[in-house]
Length: 593
Image 1: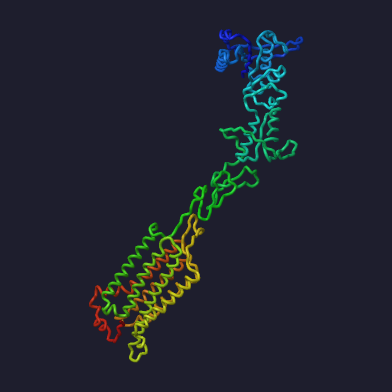
Image 2: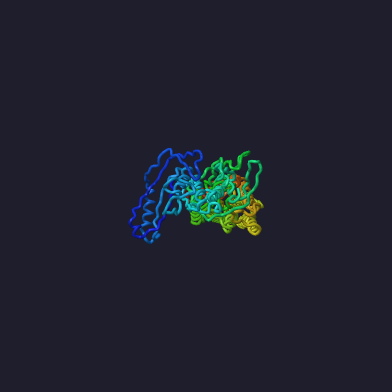
């Protein structure tokens, strides 16, 4: 490496301009051999190889700089700078020899003696490495010459009391220790090994790192003891770290979405990476534990962040099953309306007048409204719709079944009253059937009013039944009240089935008991099958099961009771006469109008 000796002399401005500078670079790859002591004040050097000259790009730059300084009268007026370049070859002996040679002059090299007549040495620049800079500083410190190093950062030259004439343009090793500490903190390393050179500099670095920069770290001594350090110093320097430092761990870093699980019987730097459970995330590397997402959020596939849960309910438009049920409800409602119009147009015919036409109209209206109440079960549940859906369905369905029960009872009474002197003749009246419908429907209405008054249904968000979903559903409020409504409808259907079964052998001309028997059998089968399916499903599928049961049971009543009569009215008008109905049996029958 090169170090430079600067010379200065006082001349006139005119003389400076006439000087032609010359860059002489003395390079030596010689080996110094110290022989037996010579006479006093004499240092004899034997050169193995002769010095020789050559130029480098950096030498030309240095020559150009000094030339510019010397030619500019505004910079160091009346002073001419000269320089010598010497290559220390990273060898302390060569560096010391060059220094003594410069101080002694061009003649014989004699320590503590200078044969230079006019020019004086202004100072020295160099060297780059501490291995040659420190010996140079030790020699120059004796004579009081200034030395500026552009690379050495050894702890020894930081001592200003010993090296008061030494200066440097490079930061000392303290900042390197600071960077090491920042690395330890940044990566969270808790078990590291520090390697230093086996000399005074390495020992000094280790000490500066055990006493000034690392806080609360346990140190192990060669003697077997240990101690903690509590101090911490800060520096104002900032470094950009380009290359990754060596790793002090035996496992790969756990990526976001994973957490660390320590391996039994190993150091804390040895661990396994386990992915976070469903509903938990970790958004940083090497996370010790996962964070649970809020109730309304769920973890994404990579378990790196929480995302909103999917809100699920039986929508009008987004679910195919909802569209099917809606279309079925509308079609059945339209069919019921068409049958109601037919019965209104042919209300004075024997088929319509038989078995109480008023109950037939009431049954058709209640069935049509029951089909329409299906839409209360569709869409996002709200508190109002949750209360209306069950009460409206319960009351309307009870009204329909009560009408069927009234028709069945009247059929049984009419044919019992045909016998002479029968006490049932006094019960043959529309008031009886109307009273039956009013009484049975009122009981269901009272049950629903009590339900709404004590514990009404309400909207509920089910956040735990399905992973990543929030089920918007109706909580029935009182489960007992809900099953009381269903149980009462089942009771009405069972009584109607029994009465129709008893009246099934009556004359066919007036007897619709067989159709009522089949419709009630279908009704009971649907609702008995619905209960386990209803209890085993959740969310929108549970609602779909209930809607299917409503449509199937209402459709059974509509088809079994009214389609045969529509067939006679529209396609067999010859059968829709009083003579035909009375002539089919040689018995006296009553027509209930």
